[in-house]
Structures are given as structure tokens and as C-alpha cells.
Image 1 (cartoon, rainbow, N blue to C red):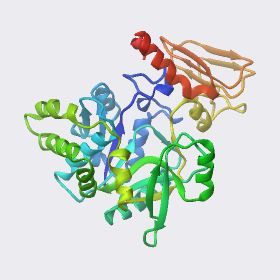
Image 2: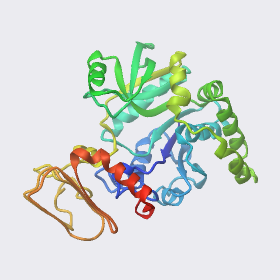
Image 3: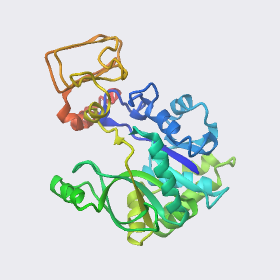
Image 4: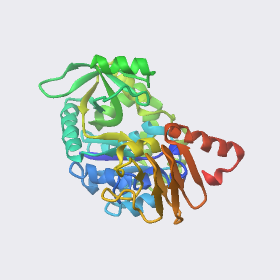
Length: 367
């Protein structure tokens, strides 16, 4: 199959570590020396080698992506002139693959997910391929472990054939807690993890049905991709493409038409969205303190960090200075060369508001 990795966004809830020009997927946030992006490429390697792996990223990140992924052919790093959301990014990759093999199987994966059981992940993707070969647009979903209000959900219907594939009846927005609780208790809902597997011709046909102008624009760009006028066509066409997610553009309408299937996965998936999440999933010391980069064996003993009588801290030493903490608990401490962030773990989701305020004040150099 072909693997397409989406490396976009700025990860503002992980500010000031994640910045506009150095977003979270370029950082080693998985508990290993690899960045999230590198870990994603390694995870899909049993399914797609370097020649069959594409990364779609923005112009500001293209050089950093290339430096981190030296095994990928240069032409497999697709550079968007500007962010047009996930449907344009995925559609461009699909259109380029379709030039050579319209019936090829394609998987689309985010560069900023954390998965602790990569072997099980590969098995689940292969189960999704079986559904894609039937012509379904497949999404890989996650069995919910709690009433989570931060994720979207999929309402599942009947099983398809003897395997684990189920039809998706509808996509559900991020719910309030009581509704999320009903979803989980019903057993009919799964978390929408934003991972997709399909035949490129099936996806492009559905894109043409629901978003004809976006489809036509992407086909124009793909046709010029290896031609001398590529930059000219990109400059003219790309800004006109509808800025919309693939869920809204294609998947919701396809589900309503009975064209979407899913495979439930249980492979230790986390959407690395904020420092609270990192504190929950990365290994800590006996008192729950997590030092990013401290390693699994000695998580609290990273050089430059001194903790005494602290509990459940998330510490990110990123400046070369000593970070010391005494007698505190449930804090996030991020030390970078130009910004120090201290906040409660419980309010990690609100870090994005600080970035918004900086932009409003004109202090975008800190963003």
C-alpha cells in the first residue's frame, strides 16, 4: 500500500515547545529519541517502504521534514504552498498516486499521534485494507476507554463479512460529557482517530461527487506535478481550493450513502494534544513526575532538572538552564530559550489561549 503522512498544524496547546516553525510533530514526544514524525514513518514501514511513503507538509517545515526523513525520496515530500486543511492534502496525494495506479490502496495517517503497540497497529491497518479492497472508504477507529469529550465519534452499524469490518452510519461531533457517556455505554460508538484506508479511485470518485470543484483543482495540480509549469499551476490553483477537512468534505456524506466502513483498533493510541496528555502516557518516576527526554529508566534524572518533594509534574527542559522545583504538584513547567511556561496540568488545554493573546498583541515572534 501507499502511506500518506499529514505533517501540518502548529500544535499550539504544546506551546512554547511547539512553535509555528517547529511544530510538535518534529519533536521527540514519544518517550524515545525519535520525533513523532519519525516514529510515524517507522510505524508504517511494514506496510509501505520509503518509495511508497509520502509526507504532505507546509513550505515552512519542508526542510526540517527532509532532514529528519533522509531515507525518503525527495519527491515524496509534497509541499503545500499554504494550509488548505486535510482534504486538499489527502486529495493531492491520492491524485498523484492515481496517475500511476488508480486502484492502489492508500492509507492516510497524522504525524502527531502516539501509538504504543505498533505491531497491533499494523495488523489493524491490514484488516482495514480488506474493507478497502471491497470499495469501502475505511476509517480506523479506537475502542473508547472512557467518556472522552475531546474526540469525535463514529456510530457503527452492521458487520461486513466474517472479519472485524463494520459499517459506519454517521460521524458524531465532540460531545458533552453526558452524551459521551451514553455513546460509550451503548457499545455502538468508537473514537474517530482520523486514520483512513481506501482505494484511491474510490476516494477520488467520492470527492468528485461531493466536492467537484476541489476534485477538479487537485486533478489540475496533479497533472502538472512533474511538468515545468508546476509552480505556475500551484500558484494559480491552490489558493482557490476549498479549505475543509476530509471528514466534512467526503466522509460524512459517504457514510450517509453507505460507503464507509471501520475497523476498531486497540493499539495504545493517543492524540498528543497537550501537556496533560503527555503526562498521562509517558513514563514517570515513583511520584508521577514526567521529564520529557528523561528516558524510561531514569525519567526524573535528566541533566538540568532537580525535583524535590514534587508530584505529577510535567517538566520540559529545553533551554540548557537548570529547572528546579520544590514542594509543588500537578504543574507543567516548560523552559525554552525565550519563553518559560508554568501552568496547572488541569488547564493544559487552555495554553492555546496564550498563543491567541500573543498574536492579538502583535508578539508573534514568540509563537
